[in-house]
Length: 243
Ligand code: ADE
Picture 1: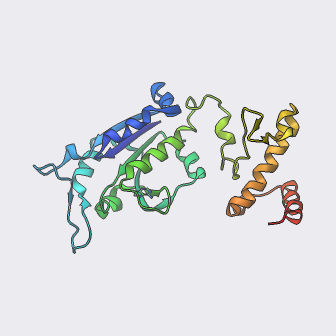
Picture 2: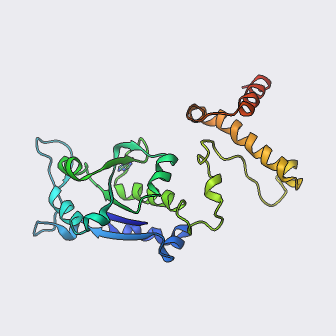
């Protein structure tokens, strides 16, 4: 997969050199190409922003430097053009999985009060938000997006199966996890995990994932079709539990 990034702060993306993500970059299953918007300023002072027409707060990123930068990328290599913005559609795991199947993506990172609307109207395929809060730059959102996508690119994760078991991948949160030591501050790891009985462990994990989702994120249950067994389990569990 090829990801083009348009930014005024290419250095921020140094962070992609760390962790599992760096693996897919070094084995070239993920190609990151950075494009500096300021280098394409049409202004001799290298300005890339200006005051908003009609007055108002802050500065707006001008159309020309961004489009000049975008045009440096061959149309075929641009692929799906995404503008990271708090006004975009909220990202979720389903969306990440479908994006991970694309060959080319171009991310436009805005700063200040945003980018000139004409860029969005003419050149952007999709506006994407990572949540209902405002960041000081789209770069941080782009990093989250790239990290989440990379987990679905073969060659990123050591254990191929692990992304399949991620929280959200089956529509549920992931169940509780434990590691050494067996007893920590008088709290013992659940017996079933020490039993060696893989069938029982799997059943316990599925049950935990379901109940945890019910308690922490019941909204997620609206989007999945529960099996008869899962429905029964939830009914039994809620009638026994003191909520
Ligand atoms: N830029 C600023 N805030 C953002 C957000 N919440 N998501 C994506 N891009 C942003």
